[in-house]
Length: 518
Image (tube, rainbow, N blue to C red; front, side):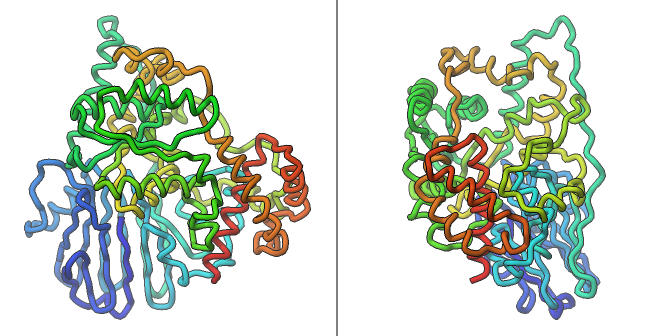
Protein backbone atom coordinates (compact mmCIF):
# COMPACT_ATOMS: atom_id res chain seq x y z
CA UNK A 1 0.00 0.00 0.00
CA UNK A 2 2.87 2.31 -0.87
CA UNK A 3 5.49 3.14 -3.46
CA UNK A 4 9.10 3.94 -2.63
CA UNK A 5 12.57 4.65 -3.87
CA UNK A 6 15.48 4.76 -1.45
CA UNK A 7 18.91 5.71 -2.76
CA UNK A 8 22.04 4.69 -0.90
CA UNK A 9 23.17 8.33 -0.90
CA UNK A 10 20.10 9.35 1.12
CA UNK A 11 20.36 6.76 3.91
CA UNK A 12 22.19 9.21 6.15
CA UNK A 13 20.01 12.23 5.36
CA UNK A 14 17.06 13.63 7.28
CA UNK A 15 13.55 12.56 6.24
CA UNK A 16 10.53 14.87 6.26
CA UNK A 17 6.92 14.89 5.22
CA UNK A 18 6.29 16.63 1.90
CA UNK A 19 2.61 16.69 0.98
CA UNK A 20 1.35 13.13 0.53
CA UNK A 21 4.78 11.51 0.83
CA UNK A 22 7.97 11.34 2.89
CA UNK A 23 11.22 12.50 1.30
CA UNK A 24 14.95 12.53 1.78
CA UNK A 25 16.91 13.95 -1.13
CA UNK A 26 15.85 11.97 -4.22
CA UNK A 27 14.38 9.20 -2.05
CA UNK A 28 10.72 8.96 -1.11
CA UNK A 29 8.07 6.75 0.49
CA UNK A 30 4.57 7.50 -0.83
CA UNK A 31 1.66 5.84 1.02
CA UNK A 32 -1.35 4.93 -1.10
CA UNK A 33 -3.52 8.04 -1.10
CA UNK A 34 -6.92 6.97 0.22
CA UNK A 35 -9.23 7.95 3.11
CA UNK A 36 -8.87 4.44 4.57
CA UNK A 37 -5.07 4.81 4.89
CA UNK A 38 -3.09 6.76 7.47
CA UNK A 39 0.66 7.23 7.82
CA UNK A 40 3.22 8.96 10.01
CA UNK A 41 6.95 9.28 10.50
CA UNK A 42 8.67 8.11 13.66
CA UNK A 43 12.07 9.70 14.26
CA UNK A 44 13.98 7.42 16.59
CA UNK A 45 17.08 9.63 16.64
CA UNK A 46 20.61 8.58 15.80
CA UNK A 47 19.85 8.51 12.08
CA UNK A 48 17.03 5.93 12.36
CA UNK A 49 13.49 6.68 11.19
CA UNK A 50 10.39 4.58 10.53
CA UNK A 51 7.48 5.35 8.24
CA UNK A 52 4.25 3.64 9.30
CA UNK A 53 1.47 3.03 6.77
CA UNK A 54 -1.71 1.32 7.96
CA UNK A 55 -5.45 0.95 7.49
CA UNK A 56 -7.35 3.39 9.62
CA UNK A 57 -9.57 2.27 12.44
CA UNK A 58 -12.88 3.96 13.12
CA UNK A 59 -13.03 6.43 16.05
CA UNK A 60 -9.29 6.51 16.79
CA UNK A 61 -7.17 9.58 17.40
CA UNK A 62 -4.35 10.59 15.08
CA UNK A 63 -1.17 9.10 16.52
CA UNK A 64 1.15 11.13 14.31
CA UNK A 65 1.61 13.87 16.93
CA UNK A 66 2.79 11.49 19.63
CA UNK A 67 6.47 11.51 20.60
CA UNK A 68 6.35 8.06 22.19
CA UNK A 69 8.14 6.20 19.40
CA UNK A 70 8.20 2.81 21.08
CA UNK A 71 4.49 2.97 21.86
CA UNK A 72 3.61 3.94 18.30
CA UNK A 73 5.54 1.05 16.80
CA UNK A 74 4.26 -1.47 19.36
CA UNK A 75 0.71 -0.28 18.75
CA UNK A 76 1.17 -0.71 15.00
CA UNK A 77 2.50 -4.25 15.35
CA UNK A 78 -0.68 -5.11 17.29
CA UNK A 79 -2.91 -3.19 14.87
CA UNK A 80 -6.01 -5.24 13.94
CA UNK A 81 -6.09 -3.95 10.35
CA UNK A 82 -3.40 -3.99 7.66
CA UNK A 83 -0.05 -2.30 8.37
CA UNK A 84 3.51 -1.93 7.08
CA UNK A 85 6.60 -0.27 8.58
CA UNK A 86 9.53 1.02 6.50
CA UNK A 87 12.62 1.51 8.65
CA UNK A 88 15.55 3.50 7.27
CA UNK A 89 18.99 3.79 8.82
CA UNK A 90 22.55 4.26 7.65
CA UNK A 91 22.97 0.58 6.80
CA UNK A 92 19.89 0.21 4.65
CA UNK A 93 16.13 -0.38 4.71
CA UNK A 94 14.01 -2.87 6.66
CA UNK A 95 10.33 -3.48 5.85
CA UNK A 96 8.07 -5.22 8.37
CA UNK A 97 4.63 -6.42 7.33
CA UNK A 98 1.45 -7.31 9.21
CA UNK A 99 -0.73 -10.39 8.81
CA UNK A 100 -3.15 -9.06 6.19
CA UNK A 101 -1.07 -8.01 3.15
CA UNK A 102 -4.07 -6.40 1.47
CA UNK A 103 -1.85 -4.76 -1.17
CA UNK A 104 1.55 -6.51 -1.25
CA UNK A 105 4.52 -4.37 -2.26
CA UNK A 106 6.86 -5.57 -5.02
CA UNK A 107 10.53 -4.71 -4.56
CA UNK A 108 13.69 -4.80 -6.63
CA UNK A 109 17.18 -3.42 -6.08
CA UNK A 110 19.46 -1.80 -8.61
CA UNK A 111 22.96 -0.42 -8.13
CA UNK A 112 22.62 1.84 -5.14
CA UNK A 113 18.81 2.01 -4.92
CA UNK A 114 15.74 0.11 -3.72
CA UNK A 115 12.52 0.43 -5.73
CA UNK A 116 9.10 -0.72 -4.56
CA UNK A 117 5.40 -0.42 -5.35
CA UNK A 118 2.04 -2.11 -4.80
CA UNK A 119 1.77 -1.89 -8.61
CA UNK A 120 4.50 -4.01 -10.16
CA UNK A 121 4.11 -2.01 -13.39
CA UNK A 122 5.94 0.82 -11.58
CA UNK A 123 9.05 -1.37 -11.47
CA UNK A 124 9.20 -1.98 -15.22
CA UNK A 125 12.59 -0.84 -16.43
CA UNK A 126 14.28 -1.77 -13.16
CA UNK A 127 14.36 -5.52 -13.86
CA UNK A 128 15.14 -7.60 -16.94
CA UNK A 129 11.90 -8.72 -18.54
CA UNK A 130 13.37 -11.97 -19.89
CA UNK A 131 15.34 -12.94 -16.76
CA UNK A 132 12.88 -15.49 -15.42
CA UNK A 133 12.79 -17.71 -12.34
CA UNK A 134 12.04 -21.17 -13.69
CA UNK A 135 10.33 -22.47 -10.55
CA UNK A 136 8.04 -19.45 -10.18
CA UNK A 137 7.10 -19.63 -13.87
CA UNK A 138 6.49 -23.38 -13.64
CA UNK A 139 4.14 -22.85 -10.70
CA UNK A 140 2.16 -20.30 -12.71
CA UNK A 141 1.97 -22.51 -15.80
CA UNK A 142 0.80 -25.56 -13.86
CA UNK A 143 -1.53 -23.73 -11.43
CA UNK A 144 0.54 -24.94 -8.48
CA UNK A 145 0.30 -21.66 -6.69
CA UNK A 146 2.28 -21.35 -3.48
CA UNK A 147 2.51 -18.35 -1.21
CA UNK A 148 6.01 -16.94 -1.54
CA UNK A 149 8.02 -13.74 -1.65
CA UNK A 150 9.45 -14.94 -4.96
CA UNK A 151 8.10 -13.82 -8.33
CA UNK A 152 8.58 -14.90 -11.93
CA UNK A 153 11.33 -12.29 -12.38
CA UNK A 154 14.82 -12.64 -10.98
CA UNK A 155 15.48 -10.00 -8.34
CA UNK A 156 11.83 -9.02 -7.88
CA UNK A 157 10.40 -9.92 -4.47
CA UNK A 158 7.13 -9.11 -2.79
CA UNK A 159 6.07 -8.58 0.78
CA UNK A 160 4.40 -11.56 2.43
CA UNK A 161 2.50 -11.62 5.70
CA UNK A 162 4.56 -11.08 8.89
CA UNK A 163 7.79 -11.24 6.89
CA UNK A 164 10.79 -8.92 7.11
CA UNK A 165 12.44 -7.68 3.91
CA UNK A 166 15.88 -6.14 4.21
CA UNK A 167 17.89 -4.16 1.69
CA UNK A 168 21.56 -3.50 2.22
CA UNK A 169 23.44 -1.75 -0.63
CA UNK A 170 26.39 -4.11 -0.20
CA UNK A 171 24.42 -7.37 -0.08
CA UNK A 172 21.13 -6.66 -1.85
CA UNK A 173 17.55 -7.63 -1.02
CA UNK A 174 16.69 -10.52 1.30
CA UNK A 175 13.57 -11.96 2.94
CA UNK A 176 13.18 -13.43 6.40
CA UNK A 177 10.00 -15.42 6.82
CA UNK A 178 8.24 -15.52 10.21
CA UNK A 179 7.53 -18.49 12.44
CA UNK A 180 4.55 -20.56 11.24
CA UNK A 181 1.21 -19.25 12.45
CA UNK A 182 -0.72 -21.49 14.83
CA UNK A 183 -4.26 -22.59 14.05
CA UNK A 184 -7.08 -24.22 15.94
CA UNK A 185 -9.01 -27.45 15.51
CA UNK A 186 -12.77 -27.94 15.40
CA UNK A 187 -14.53 -27.91 18.75
CA UNK A 188 -17.61 -29.64 20.04
CA UNK A 189 -20.24 -27.27 21.39
CA UNK A 190 -21.90 -27.68 24.75
CA UNK A 191 -25.47 -29.03 24.55
CA UNK A 192 -26.75 -25.60 25.55
CA UNK A 193 -25.30 -23.99 22.38
CA UNK A 194 -27.78 -23.91 19.53
CA UNK A 195 -27.22 -23.22 15.84
CA UNK A 196 -28.92 -19.87 16.32
CA UNK A 197 -26.27 -19.02 18.92
CA UNK A 198 -23.57 -19.86 16.39
CA UNK A 199 -25.22 -17.66 13.74
CA UNK A 200 -25.56 -14.83 16.26
CA UNK A 201 -21.82 -15.03 16.97
CA UNK A 202 -21.08 -15.16 13.23
CA UNK A 203 -23.09 -11.99 12.64
CA UNK A 204 -21.49 -10.22 15.61
CA UNK A 205 -17.98 -10.95 14.32
CA UNK A 206 -18.82 -9.57 10.88
CA UNK A 207 -20.26 -6.48 12.60
CA UNK A 208 -17.02 -6.05 14.52
CA UNK A 209 -15.00 -6.00 11.27
CA UNK A 210 -17.37 -3.40 9.82
CA UNK A 211 -17.28 -1.34 13.02
CA UNK A 212 -13.51 -1.00 12.72
CA UNK A 213 -13.65 0.55 9.24
CA UNK A 214 -14.16 4.33 8.95
CA UNK A 215 -16.21 4.21 5.74
CA UNK A 216 -19.23 6.23 4.73
CA UNK A 217 -22.20 4.39 3.17
CA UNK A 218 -22.53 7.10 0.53
CA UNK A 219 -19.06 6.23 -0.81
CA UNK A 220 -19.21 2.45 -0.25
CA UNK A 221 -20.25 -0.45 -2.44
CA UNK A 222 -20.48 -4.18 -1.92
CA UNK A 223 -19.66 -6.85 -4.45
CA UNK A 224 -22.76 -9.00 -4.82
CA UNK A 225 -22.15 -11.83 -7.25
CA UNK A 226 -24.95 -13.71 -5.41
CA UNK A 227 -22.52 -16.32 -4.10
CA UNK A 228 -22.91 -17.33 -0.47
CA UNK A 229 -19.91 -15.31 0.72
CA UNK A 230 -20.64 -11.97 -0.90
CA UNK A 231 -24.36 -12.36 -0.12
CA UNK A 232 -23.68 -12.65 3.59
CA UNK A 233 -21.42 -9.59 3.64
CA UNK A 234 -24.02 -7.67 1.62
CA UNK A 235 -26.81 -8.58 4.05
CA UNK A 236 -24.79 -7.37 7.04
CA UNK A 237 -24.18 -4.05 5.29
CA UNK A 238 -27.81 -3.76 4.20
CA UNK A 239 -28.94 -4.17 7.79
CA UNK A 240 -26.56 -1.41 8.93
CA UNK A 241 -27.35 0.96 6.06
CA UNK A 242 -30.76 0.13 4.54
CA UNK A 243 -31.09 1.61 1.05
CA UNK A 244 -27.75 3.46 1.23
CA UNK A 245 -25.07 1.32 -0.47
CA UNK A 246 -24.43 0.41 -4.09
CA UNK A 247 -24.09 -3.19 -5.20
CA UNK A 248 -21.86 -4.33 -8.03
CA UNK A 249 -21.07 -7.51 -9.94
CA UNK A 250 -19.78 -9.05 -13.14
CA UNK A 251 -22.67 -10.88 -14.78
CA UNK A 252 -22.45 -14.25 -16.50
CA UNK A 253 -24.18 -15.31 -19.68
CA UNK A 254 -26.56 -18.15 -20.55
CA UNK A 255 -28.69 -20.11 -18.10
CA UNK A 256 -26.20 -19.59 -15.27
CA UNK A 257 -26.41 -15.85 -15.87
CA UNK A 258 -30.20 -15.93 -15.73
CA UNK A 259 -30.02 -17.79 -12.43
CA UNK A 260 -27.46 -15.28 -11.11
CA UNK A 261 -29.69 -12.35 -12.04
CA UNK A 262 -32.70 -13.89 -10.32
CA UNK A 263 -30.69 -14.52 -7.16
CA UNK A 264 -29.34 -10.98 -7.15
CA UNK A 265 -32.83 -9.56 -7.62
CA UNK A 266 -34.03 -11.46 -4.54
CA UNK A 267 -31.04 -10.38 -2.48
CA UNK A 268 -31.19 -6.75 -3.55
CA UNK A 269 -34.95 -6.19 -3.26
CA UNK A 270 -35.42 -2.89 -1.42
CA UNK A 271 -32.10 -3.11 0.41
CA UNK A 272 -29.71 -1.00 -1.71
CA UNK A 273 -29.75 2.34 -3.49
CA UNK A 274 -28.36 1.24 -6.83
CA UNK A 275 -26.55 -1.39 -8.83
CA UNK A 276 -23.60 -1.32 -11.23
CA UNK A 277 -22.97 -4.40 -13.33
CA UNK A 278 -20.71 -5.38 -16.20
CA UNK A 279 -21.32 -8.23 -18.64
CA UNK A 280 -18.27 -10.47 -18.41
CA UNK A 281 -19.04 -11.96 -21.84
CA UNK A 282 -18.81 -8.51 -23.41
CA UNK A 283 -15.27 -8.04 -22.08
CA UNK A 284 -13.55 -11.46 -22.04
CA UNK A 285 -9.79 -11.86 -21.60
CA UNK A 286 -7.70 -10.14 -24.31
CA UNK A 287 -10.64 -8.03 -25.49
CA UNK A 288 -9.25 -5.46 -27.97
CA UNK A 289 -10.22 -2.55 -25.71
CA UNK A 290 -8.24 -3.94 -22.77
CA UNK A 291 -4.76 -3.10 -21.53
CA UNK A 292 -3.27 -6.50 -22.40
CA UNK A 293 -4.46 -6.42 -26.02
CA UNK A 294 -3.09 -2.88 -26.39
CA UNK A 295 0.37 -3.95 -25.33
CA UNK A 296 0.36 -2.35 -21.89
CA UNK A 297 2.01 -4.07 -18.96
CA UNK A 298 -0.40 -6.10 -16.81
CA UNK A 299 1.07 -8.25 -14.08
CA UNK A 300 0.71 -12.00 -14.70
CA UNK A 301 -0.39 -12.18 -11.06
CA UNK A 302 -3.40 -9.96 -11.66
CA UNK A 303 -6.96 -10.96 -12.44
CA UNK A 304 -7.51 -13.03 -15.61
CA UNK A 305 -10.74 -11.11 -16.19
CA UNK A 306 -8.85 -7.83 -16.03
CA UNK A 307 -10.88 -6.12 -18.74
CA UNK A 308 -14.32 -6.66 -17.20
CA UNK A 309 -13.04 -6.14 -13.66
CA UNK A 310 -11.43 -2.79 -14.45
CA UNK A 311 -14.55 -1.63 -16.28
CA UNK A 312 -16.56 -2.42 -13.16
CA UNK A 313 -14.10 -0.70 -10.81
CA UNK A 314 -13.79 2.41 -12.95
CA UNK A 315 -17.57 2.60 -13.10
CA UNK A 316 -17.73 2.56 -9.31
CA UNK A 317 -15.07 5.27 -9.04
CA UNK A 318 -17.01 7.44 -11.49
CA UNK A 319 -19.96 7.28 -9.09
CA UNK A 320 -17.88 8.49 -6.16
CA UNK A 321 -17.24 5.10 -4.57
CA UNK A 322 -14.00 4.79 -2.60
CA UNK A 323 -14.50 1.59 -0.53
CA UNK A 324 -15.67 -1.82 -1.72
CA UNK A 325 -16.64 -4.75 0.53
CA UNK A 326 -16.25 -8.29 -0.80
CA UNK A 327 -16.82 -11.91 0.16
CA UNK A 328 -13.21 -12.92 -0.58
CA UNK A 329 -11.98 -15.40 2.03
CA UNK A 330 -15.39 -16.91 2.72
CA UNK A 331 -14.40 -20.29 1.27
CA UNK A 332 -11.19 -20.46 3.27
CA UNK A 333 -12.85 -19.27 6.49
CA UNK A 334 -14.77 -22.54 6.71
CA UNK A 335 -12.20 -24.80 5.04
CA UNK A 336 -10.42 -27.55 6.94
CA UNK A 337 -7.01 -26.51 8.25
CA UNK A 338 -3.74 -28.24 7.42
CA UNK A 339 -3.90 -29.98 10.79
CA UNK A 340 -7.31 -31.44 9.96
CA UNK A 341 -6.72 -32.78 6.48
CA UNK A 342 -3.75 -34.28 4.68
CA UNK A 343 -3.74 -33.46 1.00
CA UNK A 344 -1.33 -32.31 -1.64
CA UNK A 345 -0.81 -28.66 -2.40
CA UNK A 346 -3.05 -27.11 -5.06
CA UNK A 347 -2.30 -28.49 -8.52
CA UNK A 348 -0.01 -31.28 -7.35
CA UNK A 349 -0.90 -34.65 -8.88
CA UNK A 350 -2.66 -33.22 -11.94
CA UNK A 351 -1.15 -34.36 -15.24
CA UNK A 352 0.98 -31.79 -17.03
CA UNK A 353 -0.68 -30.09 -19.96
CA UNK A 354 1.13 -30.72 -23.27
CA UNK A 355 2.60 -27.23 -23.45
CA UNK A 356 4.54 -27.60 -20.19
CA UNK A 357 8.19 -27.61 -21.26
CA UNK A 358 11.12 -29.65 -19.97
CA UNK A 359 12.61 -26.75 -18.01
CA UNK A 360 9.34 -26.26 -16.13
CA UNK A 361 9.02 -29.96 -15.34
CA UNK A 362 12.59 -30.04 -14.09
CA UNK A 363 12.07 -26.94 -11.91
CA UNK A 364 9.05 -28.53 -10.23
CA UNK A 365 11.26 -31.28 -8.84
CA UNK A 366 12.13 -28.65 -6.22
CA UNK A 367 8.53 -27.46 -5.94
CA UNK A 368 8.58 -26.73 -2.20
CA UNK A 369 11.52 -24.29 -2.31
CA UNK A 370 11.06 -20.70 -1.18
CA UNK A 371 7.55 -20.87 0.24
CA UNK A 372 6.26 -18.96 3.23
CA UNK A 373 5.38 -20.88 6.42
CA UNK A 374 1.81 -21.31 7.66
CA UNK A 375 0.02 -17.98 7.48
CA UNK A 376 -2.53 -16.32 9.77
CA UNK A 377 -4.86 -15.62 6.86
CA UNK A 378 -5.25 -18.63 4.55
CA UNK A 379 -2.59 -18.59 1.82
CA UNK A 380 -5.21 -18.97 -0.91
CA UNK A 381 -6.92 -15.82 0.37
CA UNK A 382 -3.59 -13.98 0.34
CA UNK A 383 -2.95 -15.15 -3.22
CA UNK A 384 -6.41 -13.85 -4.13
CA UNK A 385 -5.45 -10.50 -2.60
CA UNK A 386 -2.36 -10.32 -4.82
CA UNK A 387 -4.52 -11.20 -7.83
CA UNK A 388 -7.48 -8.89 -7.28
CA UNK A 389 -6.59 -6.04 -4.95
CA UNK A 390 -4.23 -4.11 -7.28
CA UNK A 391 -7.16 -3.64 -9.64
CA UNK A 392 -9.13 -1.93 -6.88
CA UNK A 393 -6.22 0.38 -6.11
CA UNK A 394 -5.72 1.27 -9.78
CA UNK A 395 -9.27 2.66 -9.76
CA UNK A 396 -8.78 4.58 -6.50
CA UNK A 397 -10.75 2.02 -4.46
CA UNK A 398 -9.82 0.30 -1.21
CA UNK A 399 -11.13 -3.27 -0.72
CA UNK A 400 -12.36 -4.64 2.60
CA UNK A 401 -12.62 -8.43 3.01
CA UNK A 402 -14.45 -9.22 6.28
CA UNK A 403 -14.03 -13.01 6.04
CA UNK A 404 -10.24 -12.61 5.97
CA UNK A 405 -10.27 -11.12 9.46
CA UNK A 406 -8.26 -13.31 11.91
CA UNK A 407 -11.12 -13.35 14.43
CA UNK A 408 -13.53 -14.75 11.85
CA UNK A 409 -10.88 -17.21 10.69
CA UNK A 410 -10.46 -18.48 14.25
CA UNK A 411 -14.25 -18.71 14.61
CA UNK A 412 -14.38 -20.79 11.42
CA UNK A 413 -11.67 -23.12 12.71
CA UNK A 414 -13.59 -23.69 15.93
CA UNK A 415 -16.78 -24.66 14.10
CA UNK A 416 -17.63 -28.37 14.07
CA UNK A 417 -17.08 -29.88 10.67
CA UNK A 418 -20.79 -30.28 9.93
CA UNK A 419 -21.21 -26.50 10.17
CA UNK A 420 -18.32 -25.99 7.73
CA UNK A 421 -19.18 -28.71 5.24
CA UNK A 422 -20.61 -27.18 2.03
CA UNK A 423 -20.28 -23.79 3.74
CA UNK A 424 -23.22 -24.69 5.95
CA UNK A 425 -22.85 -21.69 8.28
CA UNK A 426 -22.91 -19.23 5.34
CA UNK A 427 -25.84 -21.02 3.77
CA UNK A 428 -27.82 -21.34 7.01
CA UNK A 429 -27.47 -17.67 7.87
CA UNK A 430 -29.15 -16.78 4.55
CA UNK A 431 -31.88 -19.32 5.23
CA UNK A 432 -32.49 -17.71 8.61
CA UNK A 433 -32.86 -14.36 6.87
CA UNK A 434 -35.70 -15.85 4.84
CA UNK A 435 -34.13 -16.30 1.43
CA UNK A 436 -35.41 -18.96 -0.94
CA UNK A 437 -33.56 -22.11 -2.02
CA UNK A 438 -32.76 -20.28 -5.27
CA UNK A 439 -30.38 -18.13 -3.20
CA UNK A 440 -29.18 -20.71 -0.67
CA UNK A 441 -29.01 -23.81 -2.89
CA UNK A 442 -28.84 -22.81 -6.56
CA UNK A 443 -29.25 -25.58 -9.13
CA UNK A 444 -26.64 -24.46 -11.66
CA UNK A 445 -22.95 -23.90 -11.00
CA UNK A 446 -21.95 -20.31 -11.72
CA UNK A 447 -18.41 -19.72 -12.99
CA UNK A 448 -16.49 -17.94 -15.72
CA UNK A 449 -15.75 -20.99 -17.89
CA UNK A 450 -17.87 -19.67 -20.77
CA UNK A 451 -16.23 -16.26 -20.51
CA UNK A 452 -12.76 -17.78 -20.71
CA UNK A 453 -13.79 -20.03 -23.61
CA UNK A 454 -15.08 -16.98 -25.48
CA UNK A 455 -11.80 -15.18 -24.92
CA UNK A 456 -9.80 -18.20 -26.04
CA UNK A 457 -11.65 -18.60 -29.32
CA UNK A 458 -12.02 -14.92 -30.25
CA UNK A 459 -8.76 -13.41 -29.06
CA UNK A 460 -6.32 -15.97 -27.67
CA UNK A 461 -5.96 -18.03 -30.84
CA UNK A 462 -4.46 -15.17 -32.89
CA UNK A 463 -2.19 -14.32 -29.97
CA UNK A 464 -0.99 -17.91 -29.67
CA UNK A 465 0.02 -17.75 -33.32
CA UNK A 466 2.28 -14.76 -32.60
CA UNK A 467 3.60 -16.39 -29.44
CA UNK A 468 4.59 -19.51 -31.37
CA UNK A 469 6.67 -17.33 -33.69
CA UNK A 470 8.92 -16.51 -30.75
CA UNK A 471 8.76 -16.11 -26.98
CA UNK A 472 11.24 -16.23 -24.08
CA UNK A 473 8.99 -18.89 -22.57
CA UNK A 474 9.70 -21.15 -25.53
CA UNK A 475 13.35 -20.12 -25.87
CA UNK A 476 14.04 -21.14 -22.25
CA UNK A 477 12.23 -24.48 -22.57
CA UNK A 478 9.56 -23.51 -20.05
CA UNK A 479 6.89 -23.88 -22.73
CA UNK A 480 6.92 -26.62 -25.34
CA UNK A 481 6.09 -25.15 -28.76
CA UNK A 482 4.82 -28.42 -30.27
CA UNK A 483 2.48 -29.06 -27.35
CA UNK A 484 1.19 -25.49 -27.48
CA UNK A 485 0.62 -25.69 -31.23
CA UNK A 486 -1.31 -28.93 -30.80
CA UNK A 487 -3.69 -27.35 -28.30
CA UNK A 488 -4.08 -24.18 -30.38
CA UNK A 489 -5.06 -26.25 -33.40
CA UNK A 490 -7.61 -28.19 -31.36
CA UNK A 491 -9.16 -25.00 -30.00
CA UNK A 492 -9.25 -23.65 -33.53
CA UNK A 493 -11.31 -26.67 -34.57
CA UNK A 494 -13.81 -25.88 -31.83
CA UNK A 495 -12.80 -28.71 -29.50
CA UNK A 496 -12.09 -27.00 -26.18
CA UNK A 497 -11.24 -29.41 -23.37
CA UNK A 498 -11.96 -28.50 -19.75
CA UNK A 499 -8.35 -27.71 -18.89
CA UNK A 500 -7.49 -25.91 -22.11
CA UNK A 501 -8.29 -22.60 -20.41
CA UNK A 502 -5.08 -23.14 -18.42
CA UNK A 503 -3.26 -21.98 -21.56
CA UNK A 504 -4.20 -18.51 -20.38
CA UNK A 505 -1.28 -18.76 -17.93
CA UNK A 506 1.09 -18.93 -20.90
CA UNK A 507 -0.56 -15.97 -22.59
CA UNK A 508 -0.65 -13.77 -19.46
CA UNK A 509 3.04 -14.38 -18.81
CA UNK A 510 4.04 -13.75 -22.41
CA UNK A 511 2.00 -10.52 -22.57
CA UNK A 512 3.72 -9.23 -19.43
CA UNK A 513 7.22 -10.21 -20.59
CA UNK A 514 6.75 -8.50 -23.97
CA UNK A 515 5.31 -5.33 -22.41
CA UNK A 516 8.07 -5.13 -19.78
CA UNK A 517 10.74 -5.59 -22.43
CA UNK A 518 9.66 -2.70 -24.63
